[in-house]
Image (cartoon, rainbow, N blue to C red; front, side):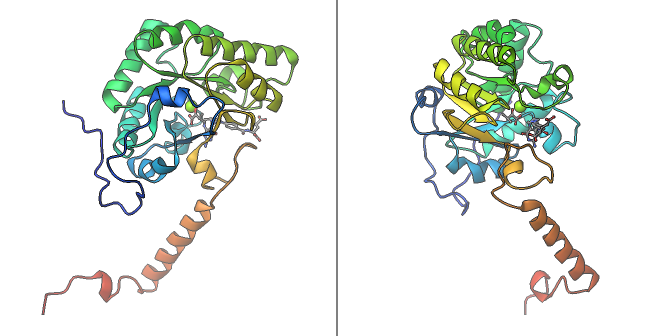
Length: 286
Ligand SMILES: Nc1nc(=O)c2c([nH]1)NC[C@@H]1CN(c3ccc(C(=O)N[C@@H](CCC(=O)O)C(=O)O)cc3)CN21
Ligand SMILES: CC(C)C(=O)C(=O)O
Ligand SMILES: [Mg+2]
C-alpha cells in the first residue's frame, strides 16, 4: 500500500509559507509550556487543513466531525473508518502543524492493548503524529502504555463529550468542590502518565487555571481558562456555520449567512437565465 502524506501546495495561492517548511514536532510543542500560546484548530478535510495550517501549531482531527459533517447526534457513533479517512486527508493538506487524531468512542476504553492497536492503526493509515483520547484516572494506565511504545498522546479532561450519556449533557464541569477536585486529579494522572498535551474542556475558569499550574505538560483550553497554555475551537464554530453554539465559541466569521447568500445568488441567476453567460461556455475557436 502506498500512502502519500503530502499535497503539492506549490501552486496554492492560499499558502503563504515557503513549501519545504519543516513540520513542528511533538517535543517542540511539549516545550511550549508557559511560553507563546499554542494555537489549535480542528480540521476534517485537506483543503481546510491547507488554509488553517500556516496559522496553527496543531491541527486536531476531532471526532466532533460526527456532528459537524456527518449530522450524527453525538460523537458516540463515530467510527475508526471516519477518523482514518479524515485524518489522512488532513495530513495530506498540512505541512507545518502537528496533526493529532481523536480516537473514537469504543476504540480504546477496553484496555491498553486494544488502545494500542487502534492508535497504531490511526498513525499507520493517516500519517498523523499523535492521537487524542478522553478520560482521567481510569485512562492513565492506557496513556502510559501508548507513550511507552512510542505513540504521543494528547489527553482530554473536564467535559468529555464521548461520555455524554453518563454526564447527562454538555454542561460545564467542576461546579462543585468535589467535582473540581476529581477533574484536577484526572488532569494530573493523564499528565503524569506521559501525555504531551492536555485538552481541558468546559470547566470553571479557576479550575482551568489550577490544572494549568498543576501539570507539567501544556494545557489547551476550550471553555476552560485564558491561563491555559493554548486554546482550541472547532473551526466550523468559529467560522459561524451554526446558529446555536456553546458559550465558549467566539465567531470570527459568519459563513452560514455567506453560503446561504451565495446559494441564493446562484439560484436566482439560474431561474432568471442569467447564468451561465458567454464567459462560462465553450465555443469553437475562430
Ligand atoms: N461543533 C461542535 N463544537 C464543539 O465544541 C463540539 C462538537 N461540535 N462536538 C463534540 C463536542 C460537544 N461539545 C459541546 C456541545 C454542546 C455544548 C453546549 O451546548 N453547551 C451549552 C451548555 C449546555 C448545558 O448547560 O447543558 C453552552 O451554552 O455552553 C457544549 C459542548 C463540544 N464539542
Ligand atoms: C473540541 C475538540 C477538543 C475535540 O475533541 C473535537 O473537536 O472533537
Ligand atoms: Mg473530540
